Image (cartoon, rainbow, N blue to C red):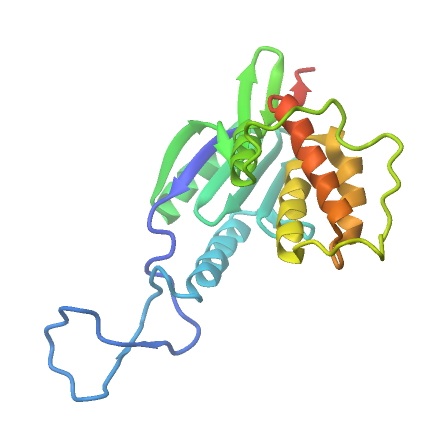
Amino acid sequence: MQQYDVKNAFLHEELEEEVFMDPPPGFSHSLLPNQVCILEKTLYGLKQSPGAWFEKFTQAMVSMGYRQSQGDHTLFIKHSISRGVAILIVYVDDIIITGDDLVERDILRRRLSTEFEIKELRKLKYFLGIEVAHSTKGIFISQQKYILDLLKETNMVDCKPCETSIDLKHRLDNDEEGVTADKGQYQRLVGKLIYLAHTRPDIAYAVSVMSQFMHNPKDSHLQAVYRLLRYLKSTPRKGILYKKI
């Protein structure tokens, strides 16, 4: 898996609508009072910039014969009957290319270099909080840093570890008589745990139980989340190994 970075991804893309802005500081040309500038290209910080950039990138990929996934529109796939498959996924200006069609992957890299200014970052090591380690056994993905950051955010770095992610005989329910927990805090923590479950299937059941109470969390539900965090404290290095065949 190779990783690439697109330089100045949000700059110079075409706009499909009229956008006006105040003259930037230091603008030397004389303007009448209350006059503004009209943008011809996108800029960083403009809410239309990500959409304009992704639209241009999608058009480039489709022109190269790639099919955009309907399940995830940031995923592009190209099959070759004789050589195999090439896969690309993009997040803002970060690109990952993989697949067993080495010829197509090289063609894709050269075409992207022509269309955009890209920088090769070599083998994928870190992407959206997911750490990737390559070895002779295969590819190991984990989220150790993500877990440590989560423990730090919740002031649980020094908490007592727990051996299980949820009480084996738990009776979590709506707990109508219970004390109401901070809804925003609960939803934020459970949301982060849902993302963590991508590399930690061992917490998937616990997270699925806790996510049932997002609309009206009680203190008992929040305590279950804290128990799960204590379990993560004891197992930060766990992940998934994709073995070589």
